[in-house]
Length: 120
Length: 179
Image 1 (cartoon, each protein chain N blue to C red):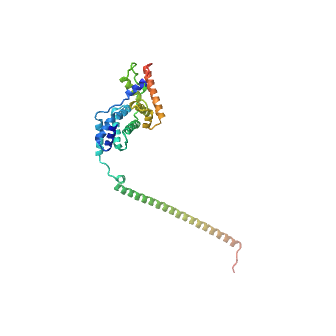
Image 2: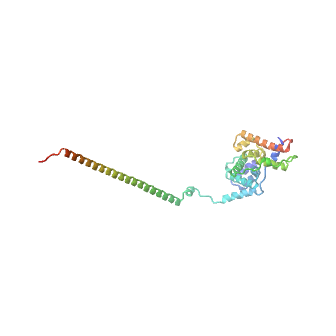
Image 3: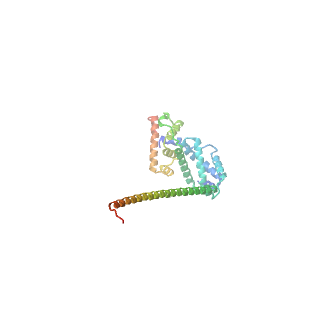
């Protein structure tokens, strides 16, 4: 047992708090006991009371409508683009067909010039 | 001990007077731990009150007077350490800046005690609490280890290192005087 041990024991000895310490502890306990406690079983109500449920429902509806409108618009745009593409293909086919007809007429008229047939 | 047992039973059954007696019986220990650790009287009183309020809520879990003492020491220690960590209540005292000890210090010299307390206050939280429990409550390393939930060897090494720091400072101050 060194002298330092003895000095530390003295320096770090137990201390007493203020005289009315225990009374203040009891007063705080009495205050806590007197405070109104939340009713049993109401924790879930506190978490999600009626108006909040309504708000959650309204938000869910709004979200569903927004998503629905967005998907409808996407479908509409896709369909319109499809229509435009179809029209372009038809036009291209028409042009190609007209060109072929023109070429065929040219070929036939040349053949007629080379081999004229006399009709009596 | 029988009286403590009876008090405990009465307090657990809702006897406020008995609980008040339990507080008076153990307030020196709880307040002492908080005060020696925090070095702030008002703060130590507040923290000690919270320890006893927590005890009031957990009275039914206390099995015996010995368990009560263990429980109070453990809660007071952990609350003091947690408070310091939460509030970054670091001691700004630098050991080297402490006033040198009087060369002719005698046993229980108030200056010596104050200087030792200030040196202890410079220790990190865990070693500081270990030193406080060791010297305030006269606990063995194994008991401190159980309270602070740490290995006995860690407690021993913290204690050894803390005492080395304290001894170095005191020896430096007192020269050849054996401490």
